Length: 145
Image (cartoon, rainbow, N blue to C red):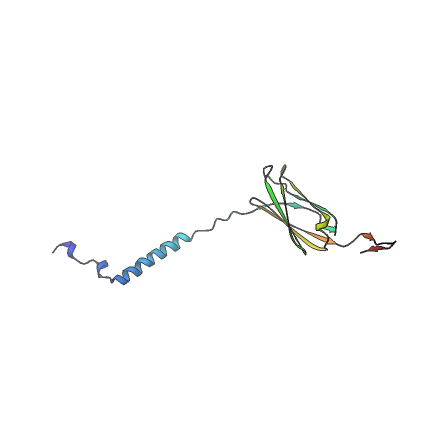
């Protein structure tokens, strides 16, 4: 009798168990290879400068930066208020991007939230729109609010 003719422990297992063991080995290998720490890049803080309060209907200048972004890098600004979001786009020049929000976009009193994004940099700021000022009705009536 030759050594090759002896049954091995592997040959003694039924075929069904061989398939089960093979599947479990594949599953364990897959799980172990997928159990790596996620490498999500940390966003860079992007400063946003704007006044804390504004009278509704006035235009506002929003400055994003300073940052070390190259000149010409695109930056987006989203303004969210009670009338929904508005999206603006500009580019950095000497590390600063300037957005001029027209008075027509600030007519509704309340709170505005600003979110700026450029490459991996993110920034957030808020602004309160207050009623105030005077306007003249037909005739000589003045209304103050």
